[in-house]
Length: 135
Image (tube, rainbow, N blue to C red; front, top):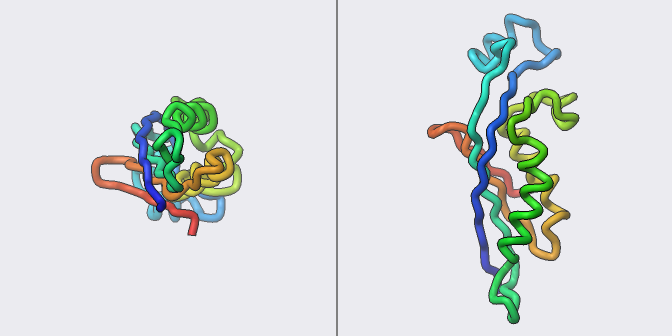
């Protein structure tokens, strides 16, 4: 039997959507106000969904305190109140929330074993949601 457990976290970060592969005009056209040279910020809400069998002793897929500790040290401490463009993950890729979602998945994938990371979902704004399941 496989069960799923989702826990939500929040962090605030800034970024600028820009790529050297495009001209200044093309960046403005592609990214609009998100290409502001001074950047802009979001209060990100990150959902981490873990899947796995329910442990017969604890009755849990993963201990919530363990999950919280891993997410805090690997994600929140790294990205909260930071400029995403300055993180090495975004040195060669645009700091879109699509890319952020994938990178958070990749960071957490091995750290959560033996539980299996099933999904990362990020709410960037009340209208924009991003999900990645590793496939």
